[in-house]
Structures are given as C-alpha cells and as structure tokens.
Amino acid sequence: MQEEEDKRPDNVVFDEESNSYNAALKPYATNVGAPVITTPDTVTWKNVNIDKVNKQVKAKYDELKAEYDALMEKFEYNNLIYNAKFNFEPIVGEVYHLYRDRNQQPFLSIIAPDHCNFDYVESFRLNADRMWEKVTE
Image 1 (cartoon, helix red, strand yellow):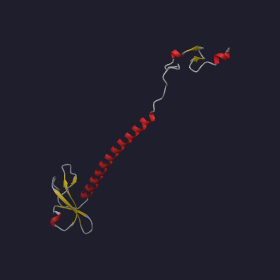
Image 2 (cartoon, one colour):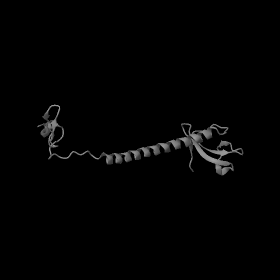
Image 3 (spheres, helix red, strand yellow):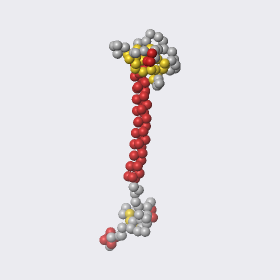
Image 4 (cartoon, one colour):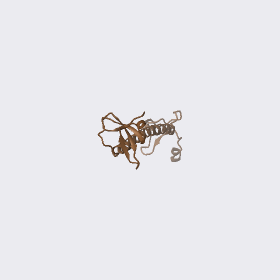
C-alpha cells in the first residue's frame, strides 16, 4: 500500500508533514490546467536601464568636467594676472591687457595691443567679484 501512495501523479500536492493534501492552500496553481508559471525576463530590462543610467552618468560627468575645466582655466589666468606686475589699481569693469616682457614675465597694462608692440597674451576685464574675465574681441 505504501508503494501506491508514493506513485501519486506530479499534479497532486501532498504534504508529508501534515499527511494531507494541501493544493488549495498554495499561493500558486497546482493542477494540470493551470497557467504556466514563468519568471519574467529581467535581463533585457536590466540591460536597457543600465545603458540609460550609464548614458545619464556619462552626460553628467561630461557636464561637470567641462565646468571644472572652465573653472580651472579661470583660476589659472586669475592667478597669472594677480601675479603679474602692474603699478596701478585696476578699476572694476575696465579692460586691461596682459603682456610678457623680455624676460617672459607677465605684466598688465592699459595700453591696447594695437597701440604698442609688446608681446601680447590676452585682454581681461575685472568684474565686480574681483575676478578677471577674458575679453573676446
């Protein structure tokens, strides 16, 4: 008799601990006519979203890097100008011109490049925050 009980079909749900049939208690269907239980394919969803996230992170990185590079450039030329020689107090809003002397030392002047033959570097304007900004002509 024990052998007959062991040969139950696969669709019969029998709990050996309670020695009872418990198909009605399962959270999923157990009979042959029940829909097939399949796990969703999350690999495609993950790959698509990983790609999207990577593109967002790359775009943000590129944006921050460009901002950092611009800030470092501003720092470098402000450092260059503040370490240059000049014998006057620059006025906010005015344009000044950076040159190099014979010893390649930077100096600031009010003389425009077309009125002299100094080694011209760049023109700058002092803003209200006392930061030098490049002047594009």
